[in-house]
Amino acid sequence: MGFKIAVAGATGNVGREMLSILAERGFPADEVVALASSRSVGKEVSFGDKTLKVKNLENYDFSDTDICLMSAGGSISQKWSPKIGAQGCVVIDNSSAWRYDSEVPLIVPEVNPDAVEGFTKRNIIANPNCSTAQLVVALKPLHDAATIKRVVVSTYQSVSGAGKDGMDELFNQTRAVFVADPIENKKFTKRIAFNVIPHIDVFMEDGYTKEEWKVLAETKKMLDPKIKVTCTAVRVPVFIGHGEAVNLEFEKEITADEARDILREAPGCLVVDKHEDGGYVTPVECAGEDVTYISRIREDATVENGLALWVVSDNLRKGAALNAVQIAELLVERNLIKPHATT
Image (cartoon, rainbow, N blue to C red; front, side, top):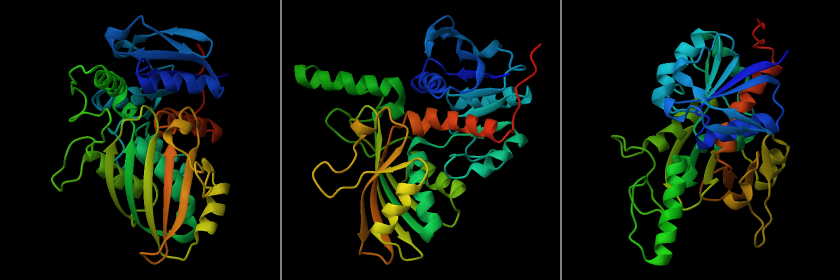
């Protein structure tokens, strides 16, 4: 008997990607249900070679549903995830609503799979921020080998991280530049076409943005609370795929060659690091791919035991939808959930 899976927020970018990945990976589901708000009821979304009609999240009965992949936003998750969990359905939430709750595990399966067992306290598991997910996949094997003391990361984040509205704004502004139309800023604080914006999410009292704080807090929660992390998060005019320039300081000595060998063997990582024109991966190549690509691995002589590297991944997949499905797979593989008995 297979599982019954619900995808909440099924009409959004990440929700559609979740449905696609569930089908792609052959998740053992007997039934998949697409959910969204009342205004989307009756719309159709694709699931493999099937078409699903969207149902209303607000009056859906989760009592016979095993897993809900939640990608409907933080406020909706705060309202509905505890109610869904109380009905015996495990929520895997893609928003930031539960990531910093001590009773909710924050999981990247390649990094901290054992922590998933803590889900029973609330029946909720949190997916990390898209930029953190790819970062910790690259950091975990290096931390295990040489113990990371400090991380300095600058992110180059695509507009799809801001949803469909962000993608539309880049497209419309780019077209406006070429035809000399007026350029409107709606989603972003400044023009994104042919520009970069060092501002993602709201500003905090210390001058960092919430996006930058998320990378710090989530890396510490999943990897090691002792690691010092600083981040500058930048929105760039790219549709899909986040890039990150990462500088690392270790407790133990580690060479670039050793790091390459470690990362080549690490789960979820793919090293493409040739010291020649084009011998690295950019967001265009990573779109639609599941792995986290690591390039430009080199020693940093400005600190003792330092490395610099370039990390790229598809933010809609590993940064969101794929990671959520991998968490669901982890629950199944470890026999932490059983399908509800059919009535």
